[in-house]
Length: 359
Image (cartoon, rainbow, N blue to C red; front, side, top):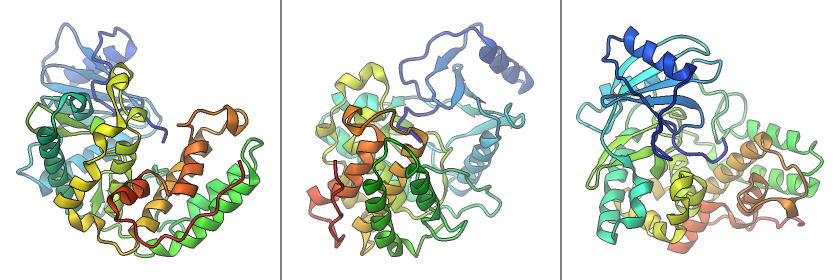
């Protein structure tokens, strides 16, 4: 997964669009018996076609798979497990098949929290993180549905199936070793570090759900409360600190996740307190004795996956700072965004020093 805005959020602001996707969205509304509107608006999404009415959001799958069917099942499981939580998505209808599936959910009020953040004062931000911690804890208390299909390629390719937890990451490194613009020494150093860190996740718990992509772009805010948590595409069973890795990566590199129209107003320094506030509101998320090692492994796995999908088109010196190649080097040398956030809080635990690769 490359860095991207939230699927279904109103990133650049909804815009009218007349094309085949809109015609399909209108047909979905008819088939569901929902009111038709003279004008639909399109919301930004990198993975789906998303159209909004006053009351509903219609998501249309662009890919030849049925991942929206999986997300519909997840949202229903969350609604059953968390009946009193208004921020849980309300599924109105699902249908279609591979390459044609759609998901209709009730539209919630609010806009992405990341859009509000630059103008919020410190007490407002503190309250928002307190509410976010509540949502996150609630998700983590939901048992993983027994019939939930596995994700083929989650952002951090770590799981018990197949083989060792980090087997897919090692496979990704083997692929990168064949690339002409990826340094062999870097691949070797990352492999050594992944092997060193592997036993920190032998207790890779998949019994409860994680969100998997919880950035401030995937949280709707109405000025005083969280009204919705969006985009459960990467939701799956996994250790809860995987969500910590995602959140602290966002807080460290927020410009990489937000919509272009307010990227210029988004500053990493505005997110410096997010990690410390999470420690106060959700302390058990930080209690693993080898947390820093686990978070470095999560970061390395994430960047290996990202680099296999977006390999360098030239030498590293020609790449931007947010290219997965440079982020992978940062994860090896500095531990990645989450470990750097822990270091600032004085909470980093005993991760042995990584090997610095050659430039």
